[in-house]
Every structure is written in C-alpha cells, then in structure tokens.
Length: 104
Image 1: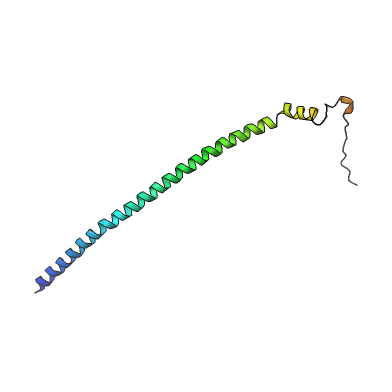
Image 2: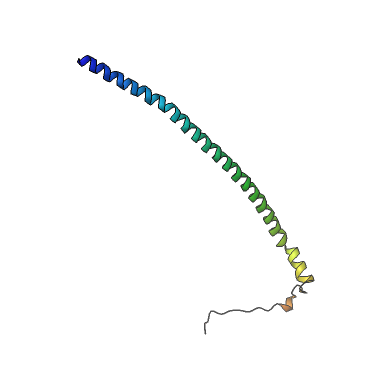
C-alpha cells in the first residue's frame, strides 16, 4: 500500500513538473518578445539622439564661425569708423589717470 501511494505521489509530481515546463515555454517566449521590443525601442531612441546630436554639433560649429566673424578686429574697426564716426586715438588724445590707494 505504501508503494502504491508513493508511486501515485511520484506520478503526481511528474505531471506537475510537466505542466510547469509546458507553461514556462509561453512565458519565456513572451518575455523574449518583450525584451526584443524594448531593445528595438532603445535602438530607435539612440538613433534619434545621435541625429539630434549631429544637428546640434553642426549648429554649434556655425555659431562659433559667426562669433569669429562678428568679433573680428577689422569688422569692429570698420563699424567704429564708418557708422559711429570714431577714429584711432592719437598720442595727445590719451589721458592717463593714476589711482592711489587712499580712500575718502
């Protein structure tokens, strides 16, 4: 009798193990599909961010070039002379002011 009960218990556990194995296959396939979708989404996001980075780098290069052109000494001198009516200071036009360390 003890052998019969022991055999039925073994058979029961064997059936449970087969059922768990059978149920784990769809669960693992679902998990694999989820991971694949997540990987695809992240790859797409990386591609978009790389394109955005390239665009920002090009824009930054253009802005640096513009700054270089706008801050050139020749351009500033031309604007000062032609638009503002300024001229280079002669030696006699320069006034030197000395500051002492005294406070009032």
